[in-house]
Image 1 (cartoon, rainbow, N blue to C red):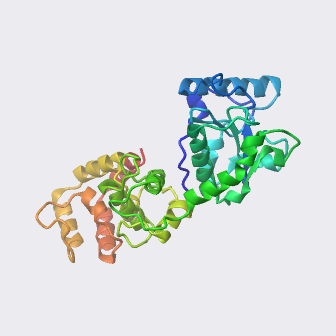
Image 2 (image 1 turned 120 degrees about the vertical axis):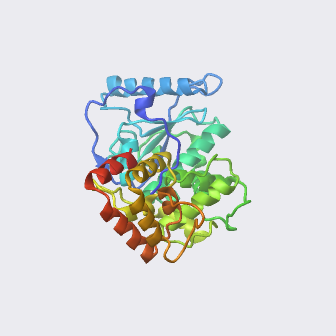
Image 3 (image 1 turned 180 degrees about the vertical axis):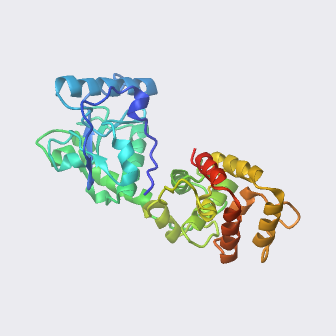
Length: 357
C-alpha cells in the first residue's frame, strides 16, 4: 500500500549507525508522543529544516548514550516547522513490506512493535501550530494507509504507561486527530475529475506520486497531468480508465497492494507495457531498445500491432507510444510476444537493467 508522507531519512539527517539492526514487526497501532522540550519561541529546532536535523541527532545521541538504546527510540520526529524525520533506522525501508521495526518509545513491548511519533514541544497546555498539526495528520494518514490501520488505533503514550506524554492538550486532541485522518482517507463525496480543486485533489496527487505516476505539481488542481496519471493508474489496476476518481478508484489508491517488482533478469514486453508509468528512466530505456531493433522487424511488429487499431496511423510506431496505447488486448499481447521473440537475450538483459535503473 502506498506511503505518501514526506519524510527525511535518517541517512539524510546524519544518523550514526545503530548498535544493532532492529527486528521487523507487524504494526497495529500509531502512538503519539511529545518530546517534552521548549515550545516556540524557544523551540530547539527553531522551526527550520537544519534545526530539525540537529534535533534528531541530539535525540539519537541521548537515546543511545544516556538511555543505552540501540538507536533513536521513536520511529518518526515531527518538528514545529512541520518537518518529519525518520527516527529508528530501518523504519522507512520496512514500510513497503507492511512492516515496522521494533523500537523503544512506549515502555511496552507490544506497543513498541508499532510506530511512535515524537512531536517536538511540550503539549501539557501549549497548542500545536498549524504546520506541525498538518504534518502529523499527513503522517498518520499515510501510516494508516500503508499498514491498513484503523484511525481509531491512533493512541497516546499514556495509554500504555503512567506518563504525562503526549501532554494533556495533545492527548485531548486525539479524537480530533482520528476524525481528520479518517476524513483524509475517505473517498471524495463527489467524484474528482479534470477541473476539480481542493485538498482532496492534493491527497489524490500524493497517492498518484506514491504509486509512481507523475501528476505534476502537488497543488490541489486536477489538470491534464493529473488526469493522465489517473488513467494510467486505473489501467494498472484493471479499472475503467476514464480519468474520473470515484469511490472504487480511491479505494484502490489507498488500500490495494502495489505491483510486485519484476524479479527476472529479462522483463517480458507485456509486463513492460503493464508497468509503464511515463517515468524518464523508462522512456530512455524504450528509446534505447527501439534503436536496437532492425527496421524490418519494427515494421512487421507495427503491422501486427495495428491489425485491428491504429493509434498513430500517420506516424512510425514508437515503443513509447506502444506502452502509452497498451490496453491489455489479446492481439496487442500477441504482437508484443512476437517482438520479444525477435530480440536477443543480451539486448533484453541490457534493456531490463536500463528499465530498472
